Image 1 (cartoon, rainbow, N blue to C red):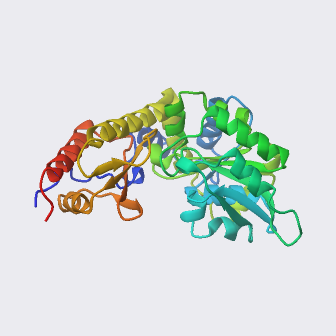
Image 2: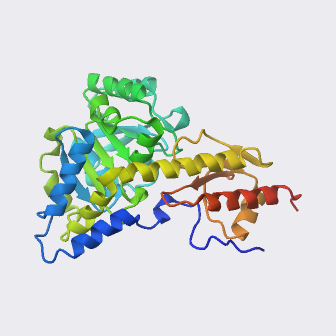
Image 3: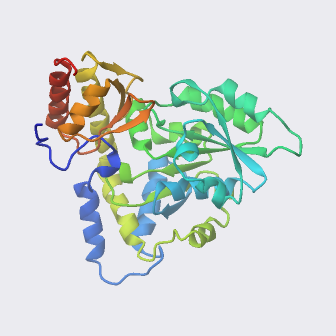
Length: 353
C-alpha cells in the first residue's frame, strides 16, 4: 500500500477546506477591533449586509446564521405555514440531508418531491405538482426550492430559472434558492448574480460561504422584503443569532472584496474540469454527469474505489454502489488532482483480483 503524499487533502467535500487567506485576515482584523456591540449591531455586520446588497444590485434584507441547514430551513419556514407544502427535487439537500429540519422549523410543512434529469426540477414537473390537488385534505403548495448548483454538480440556466419562476408566480408559490454553492454556479454561468436570483424571480436565497472559503456562517437574503417580516425573531428562537456576530460577518468582507468569492469558485470549478478530463477515459471509470461546477460524479469499479482508499484518498459514494462524488475546493492544487488521476490510472492498468 502506498502512502498518499497529499496529507490533509482529499476529495470528500469542499467543506473540508480551510479558511481562505482574505477571509481569515478580515476576521483577525475584526478581532483586533477591541470591544464592539454584540448581536449584529456592529460595523462589520452592517458592512457585510451592504456589500451583499451591492453584489446583487438591489435593496434586500440580509441575515446571518451558522450553517446551511439553518439557512434553508428557516427561510422555508418563513415562506410557509404548517399546513403548506414545499416543492423540491427528489435529491435536493432539503429532502435528503437536512434531517427533517425544514419540516421541524415550519411546524410541519410537507416536502413534495418531483423528479427531473440532472438534479433539476422541470417546468412540467413543477406544473404537475403545483396543480396535483387543491382540496383541503392535501397540504397546499406554497413554495418551491431550487438548488443552485444542484446536488449532482449541474446548474440551472437563466432561462430555466425564469421559466420555473413564472410557473411558481402563476400558482402563487414563493421561490427559494438553496445556494450553498451559489458562487460556483455564478462562475460556471458567467452571469451577474442578480440574473439568477431576483431578476429571474427568486424571492429568497440561502447564500453559501463556508464551501467558498469562510470558516462558518451562511447568509439568508430576502429579495422580497415582505417575506422577511419577523425573521430576526425566527433566527433568535432557533439559536442562530450569534452574540459575537462580527466573527461570522467579517470573513464575508474578505470574501466579497475584490471578488475573492468569484476567484475561489472559478478555481474550484477549473480543478473539477481538469479532474474530469484526466479520468474520463480511464478503464473502469464512467462520468455520470457533465461537471459544470466543482463536483465530479463518476462510476468507479469496486477495485478502483478500494485501491484509491488504500492509498489514502477519501471520497463519498453517493449514488448506488459505484457512484462516487469527487469534490474540488477553493484551495485544490492541480498537483493533487494529477496525483489522484495518476493513482487511478495506475490502479486501472492492473487486473483486479
